[in-house]
Length: 79
Image (cartoon, rainbow, N blue to C red; front, side):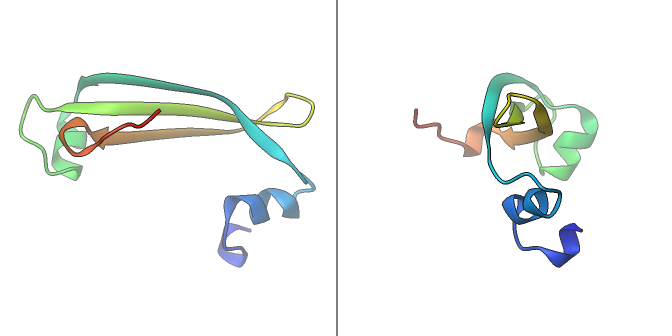
């Protein structure tokens, strides 16, 4: 269904999920593994920020899990 829609919200709506929110986000830092270093064009031992997020429906049930990795040297977090 994703190919038919332009956003995650539209995909979820196509499954009958009219509304959702971010249930949690966890951000941590660690050294990139070999694959991440290659994919992100990082030097060996470089640090990545890892973001894990869970979206929930209006009753609090988890509906999606997102895992992202970013080169720490190229990211600024504003909270």
